[in-house]
Figure 1 (cartoon, helix red, strand yellow):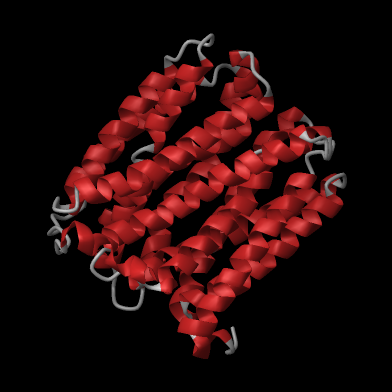
Figure 2 (cartoon, rainbow, N blue to C red; figure 1 turned 90 degrees about the vertical axis):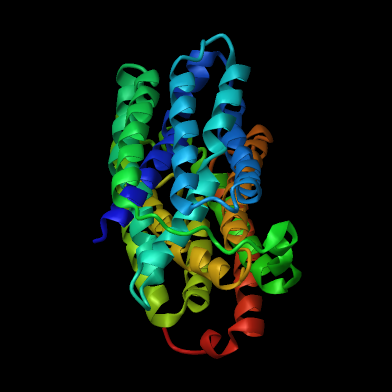
Length: 390
């Protein structure tokens, strides 16, 4: 595996910790800051909304920069935000919202620029798999980092995790400088040219599918910890182990999604995985009280979500000629706007008294919209693949 992909994977590991840790420690933060769990869910929303701002701002400001310089600056911001979150006073939850927004600012732009770097250093026909290798860092965060972080936050303090994140940021900066080659800036098509690809319907369908699919996942997953303990009967001590299982699903999904996309085409693969995801969420809603069933369904849900990542990122690169940095930024906006909308919708469902399992049902409705977007894309732009065998 190219060292440059390893450096990118270090980066996605860092952002995986920063983003997904909140799902496992939400009750701990709520107690420490003296707020309710739905209110603590705003920490997730603030991060996701900031990604939506940071990605296009970076694409506009840094479009003439070499790609390595872009991700270097982004990681300096990440490391500073990690230190500030670790030091945030417990009587100022609003300040934690600000620091969470700061942490989210570089997230989308890093994945966008990183996807372009991964595509450039990949061998012909393996772009999806190279992007999948980059994203392995995020799956490793969910497989190892999040469960360990959840345990440390529960047994000791959540602040230790963000101190670790700051140190890891420095490790990643070193790897970026040593292992990622100096790549020329992308062709500068001007500010208007960065947005020209949005005149086509194709990227909008990819963006909508990405946003709705992620929205469906985070509507349920943002509140997985209280659902498992209060509905499924899982002990709080077991949550870390279930997070390991969820992380394993992400590893399987990211590798499978990359390989399948390179072999069968990203649109074709994305459509079928999204359909499977709808059924998994419906089963979680129906079987939430059954501990021995909802746990493997959690594995399948995370597998589906992360299997969608490589095809989505490759599709947007293929449909954003002249504005690939902005295109990559837009799909990251879609990822995280979906996270924000889904997390908010899940909180509304819980506050309305419908219970934690209803978040999965609402999530399935989001995912159905993603299925329709994929289907229309394959019908209009990739019809020959939509009716083939997988």
